[in-house]
Length: 82
Image (cartoon, rainbow, N blue to C red):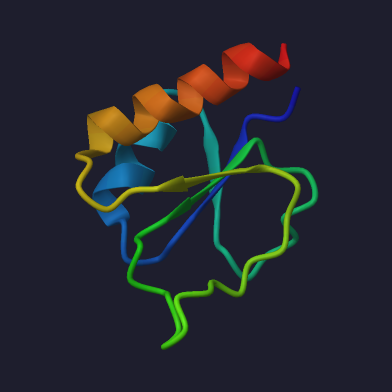
């Protein structure tokens, strides 16, 4: 299973913790077809509240979570897809 996680560029601390845990981090503008999860900051909503991300991967909203909580959510997703 892929250990790629797409992370919003605004979430540097999340990127660092994910990489320390052995995940490969990519940006939201890259190909999202092979990612395990997509982590968004919650700040990318347009005025209607929609986000312009199209993927079948689990989307994790990091607003209100610290980096370790986000990593825990990614690990839950990884366990579900095994």
